[in-house]
Image (cartoon, rainbow, N blue to C red; front, side, top):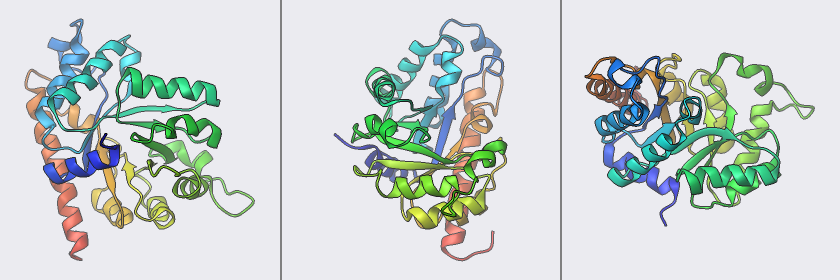
Length: 277
């Protein structure tokens, strides 16, 4: 079985892309012709997938947007559709973790029920809560490190008695003792380029999932400069999927995805060739 990082590498090469498109289906923002349909969430996501799958290296459905509408079965269908019709891996954004017995159930939910290729995981219960996820050795376990939301510094930048911030501790453990199967990735937000640079210093070439581009205002050249030296998966959700609001929403999403992918590639080229951007 091909593992998640191999899937990401293949999609990156095939589509010349570092872009991940987040699937956050909000009926209040979806096109009117889909918002009231019984399977409108599935149809909306299918339209985005069909329009953008040759421009991305991953899709990232956020489970809350499905669960809040009682649309868990539509989420399962979306992931099944992506696997059946594209070569693009799926990151389930659920930020799960609990005591180990509950984490085991969360892992089964993500990987056995929904069939995700990777899962976002909260590290703040410690190693025993992460282990059930890591036991799925072919899956990507994407641990929250320095998130993109404005309030993240309240906890993640607290300095420990050893002089490390919380996010630095998470980065160090994720790159070292926790990563016994080599299937850990880290979430590092585009909105905090200095911390992103520090995380790269700690973890070396480990692949980073970088949210915050688009609606959250993350600067693409800045994040590429901070994250250089290892793998990246750069996520944009609302700026792509809600680029249009009519029956042509999928065409608008494709145009936004292409623009974002190309902006990322231009920044990578410029930084790698020491060109001012």
